[in-house]
Every structure is written in structure tokens, then in C-alpha cells.
Length: 144
Image (cartoon, rainbow, N blue to C red; front, side, top):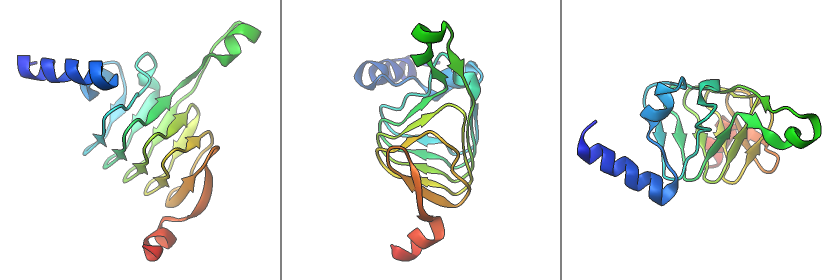
């Protein structure tokens, strides 16, 4: 790693909490070709080995992928973990959160501010808290 890359990554981490994609890959996250993420994305650094990303994914600002659930710790004494799999040609809007045990199919679109807590089939547009399917990606393109 060059000094310039190190400084760039350090500034990104201090400013947005970002870690470079290579950090996640070295810890087991699978990343396809043409992965594009904007500032402030968090890809569950301690559990990134549970995350698999396809080709041509775009994550907008402040997207979070969370492959664990600590809410069970005080009541049950254990933490839950689960996989996240995102298909090819997926767009995830700003400030969205993808929770554990979720698969997002190819060509899906996730609207800004969504919380995805269940699978989203291929070719669908989903948005909301919790995210619900609102139309197909083809219908969305026709509206635009």
C-alpha cells in the first residue's frame, strides 16, 4: 500500500468511518466486479466474512450491512449471526440498512432510507421501514 493510499484511507475513516474495500476482502467478504460504494458505508467489519456481493453493485451514501444481532444478548446470553447476499446489478439508496439473513436478487433497487429485513426477489423495487416491494424494476423504468 502506498503512502498516498494509506493517507486517503485514514482520512476516509476519520471523516466518514469508512474502511477500504480491501480491508473487508482480506477478512473474507466476497466482492464481485465493479463494486461502487459512496462515503459512509459500513459493511460490518467484524462479521464481513458473512457478506457476499455480486457484480455491478452501487451503494449510495451511508448504507449499512449488518450481519449480526446483539439485541438478543441481554435476554438470551447469545448473539445471532446471519449471511447477507446481494446479487448482480443492484442499487441500494442512501441511508439504507440491510440486516442479516437477507438475500437481494439480481437487478433489484432498494429505495433510500429503507430497512431490509427480508429477502427481495430479483428485478424488484423495494422501499420503506421495513422495506416492502412496491413495483418491478421494469415498471419503475417505464415510469421514469
